[in-house]
Amino acid sequence: MALLTIAFASVARRGQSTLSGLWLLGWTMIALHFAAFLFLPAPGHWGDLASFLGLAALAWGGVLFMWAAVPYRSHVTSSLWLLFALLVTHTLYLALLTINPPASWTLVPAAILFGALPLAIAIVSLARFNHPLRWTLVGLQCCLAIFLLMIQRRPGGADLALDAIFFTVYIGCCVHFWYGYHRATAGAFITIAGFFAWAAVFIGGPLTVHFFPHMHLEDEVWNLPKYVVAVGMIMLLLEDQLEHNKYLALHDELTGLPNRRLFQDRLINTIERARRSGAQAALLLIDLDNFKQVNDTAGHHTGDELLKHVSDLFTGRVRRSDTVARTGGDEFSIILEEPMTRADAARVGKTLAKLLEEPFICGQHAVRVGASVGVAVFPDDAPDAEALRIAADLRMYAGKNSAKIAVAELPQPRLVKQPPQRETSPVIKRQAGLQTAE
Image 1: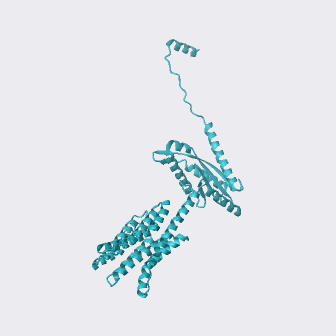
Image 2: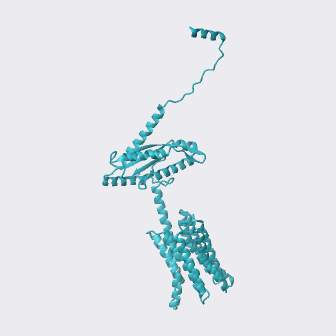
Image 3: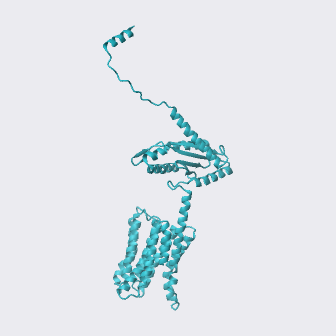
């Protein structure tokens, strides 16, 4: 298990995230569970301490796995309170149960807390947040509390209580992973099936002892689901890393928009669909004006924020079926799907260019950029994707050059220095007056 934990850490290190950190912490708890159980034969209180640490670490690991699979854990404060409630209730009950002999009256309030604390948190936060996965967890905890109150005082009730606690924890992991990784991949299937088998151990073990008392199974047979889950979670990490690498290969890292490679693929598919249906499709190339001056005067950070702002503006003003891509440093390309006419495409281009006339505020800088737009329509302007892109590119630069010429032809104000005024003598004034009269 220690070697599997090290292998898991090696895989998680290549794609560090909050999720992989929680999983690694969970497997560290499982390794601590195995390590603590090595000292169970220790005499006196040392054996009790080893038993408590082993059982608590097994519960802590399951709770961490469960919480890591909660999709809303990072932005819902009550989810963190629910995590603390689960950790506290499991730790308290296991500590009381490992006291030899335990005070039986203390187990009653401890068992009630299993259901009362999660239920109270869910009800208090109901006005702000509500999710079926949370109520599933609350229902499991309430069922556990009722079961513990029923069996904990009976002969052999302590062992049944432990089995019930760990069954609830790991069937909860199975439900949470099924909800969070409901996808057809080997890693998801192995992990969910492994958690289900891990939970089933705590039912199968007591049933085997009860119905087949002479059957002997080695302890490692019951530990096999742990290794299955570890392998499945490593596969999940590798699948997520491959998916992330695939995303980075097809999307711009700064804006998250499709990059040139994905843009080319979508443009070809759009043209093929338009050709089959006999409709039109349009391509817009939009180049930001004076973007280099923004980087030079306000810094590259402001330029990056401006590009993100422009990408948000563009994606918010086109249809979902259309594609907005960043195909250059300050160049954006937009594929307008059918139905689309040249007038519609020109109107979209003017609208997007007008959006950039408003100043963008970034920190202490107020940035204003313009845009040059090139429009090309399939099949009127070009028969294929490459020719359509060239046609839009030529029209964009033609518009940019004509704008420069128009600016250059405007009359420029000139400051002319006036000669200093000197005091005129009375004789000259009289002569000037005579000449004027004549």
